[in-house]
Amino acid sequence: MDRDVKICIKIDGIIIYEFSGRVNEKIMISSANNIERLLMEKGAKKEKVQNVFELFIETVQNILNYSYNVKLNSNKKEVFCNFSLLYSTRDDIYILESCNLIEEAQKEVIEFKLKSLENLDDKALRRLIRKKSRSREDRHDRGAGLGYIMMTRKSSLPISVYFTPYREGILKYKQKLVI
Amino acid sequence: MDNILLEQSDNSPKVIMDKDRAFIEFKGKSYPENTFAFYRPITEWLKHYFKYCNDKNKSIIMNFKLTYFNSATTQIIFEILDIIEDAEVNNMEIYWFYDKENSNAFEDYEDYSEEFPELNMKAVVY
Image (cartoon, rainbow over all chains, first blue to last red; front, side):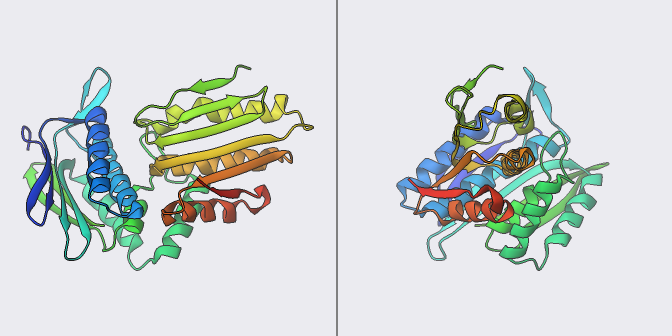
């Protein structure tokens, strides 16, 4: 986990895009652009491309902002993590999986956020985004506090998260988005 | 007060804030690493502009031509529209450009226009 980084895109089990290295802003941008280009070349619908692109960005920005092992390189954040993007032609769904390290205290925060979004339909999620955007109640230096709401809204299934111990006080955080 | 002209980058939009032409535009993708820091001069410019520079005989045009934006930008757009609403500007035309093949973009327009009905935002297909 401290050394291995892998970003790959698979279609029905076949990798069509792969990246290895540290994740930082520059790599996030190039990966997002590559994902967009690949999906457009495949003839994916624009909504789908936009959702995958936006959820990829939200996920990586969350990782850069909240991972415990963020390093600064020339004042730019860098972090080790894993990514994969899979596409199932049968169901026309994309699965974006990521894994990064977080402090144990983050687990409760994430679970609380996801619990509060359970059973909200698209209209309710849109209303919540509007309410929180205007009140700015969850805003902080690193973001608007809207990431999980946006991810829930643009995913076709509830967000799956898994926490496994890594070492004392640190957890591996795995997240799965179905788009 | 100087105009603001920022060139488009891979993750930040082209920004035109031209007080002489009464023309404001955001174009491209918007997911800067520190979104709030990126937009802070822009929101400050708008507050100053509406307070001291607004020629009420001239229509101000504001165009949103954003293709992708992150959740922090979503909130910034609300903040920009809040600033306009608070300034009680009556000489403003706000246009939301969207791709007709992308229903997400039109839903974004619906959310903003319903939240700020008095601003009379208009959707434009491009």
